[in-house]
Image (cartoon, rainbow, N blue to C red; front, side, top):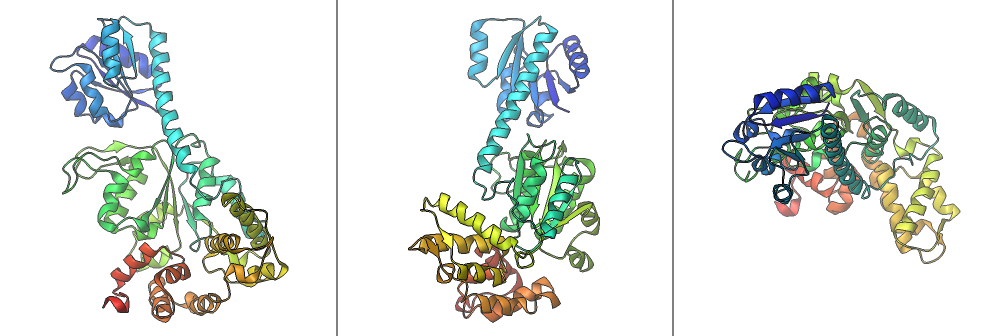
Length: 445
């Protein structure tokens, strides 16, 4: 339900507007002057109706504090000059008193719709940078058919979904499918990699902060949860969240509200949460590293993505799809895999899953000097023994111990980029985890 702030110094007008707009299905807050309106956090509303002439400061003074929320100016002193001045200062529209009720309702709906379209356009521009289109969840193995069926069933609901799977299996693609098949598809999908944000900044990045909340907070900042309002929030690698942030996230799920860092007031948000992790959250809960109450709020619906090495002939279908994609992206002439290359792809373990396969295919397209991609172009043989050696003990150890052994066993023969790829994580995540576990490179002391 959209929230509207009515800013007018005449109680009779505020009451009349409240009654009119509430009958139309809006939630209304009132203020008699700009100072009172600013105390209500005007940037948390969907629209502000402000009288031009108010005691203390004109209604246009609320525009900077609105922080992008559309402001419609009302006045009984209608003139072209005042309308132009209001629009110059950032008002989205202008209406003269006394106004026709139908005209006002149409104006309000138009202003809110324009705001919604701006957010959708911003989300679509961001989506253009994504690697996999939602409609292409390639694969016909039983596990992938089951994944698609689960997504189709849960997508129309607002149920929280936890996506499980190894790094590189396509967890963000599954989250995007959930969003695009939901009633929130016209809202934004905000994707956050929790492991990529430094621990000291993640609380502010997710929930926002007020100006002066901490050193360096030189201006007010809306968090990523707020940016996902009316849409979906995808938290990848949610197992990396610190305990304090887990508690804040639980409050979002339970009360549909956030409290920015340094603020004394909570804000309502309407989001659908999709979370993902490659970590064992059951084990983390047992160790006290993840909140049990948050875990049970997350696992209402679990979707497990199979590793690529368990998808059989899907690997070849996916390899050909990624080959077509890479050829188009790199503006290369058409290519095909040799029979030997297909057999090598089918027999490889793909510890980095789809992400590793995509990297190998892109490399092959760049190196190919004929119409056929051979085994050497893929660069699989040198990495295969290291991957298999690492995988040999992966299922018997905790993730931290697996990381420790994998690093110690391979850091002398791999550079940081190769080691990060072996682990299926970014170089930044590798460095951060090294620091946290006290495993600096030997040449760093």
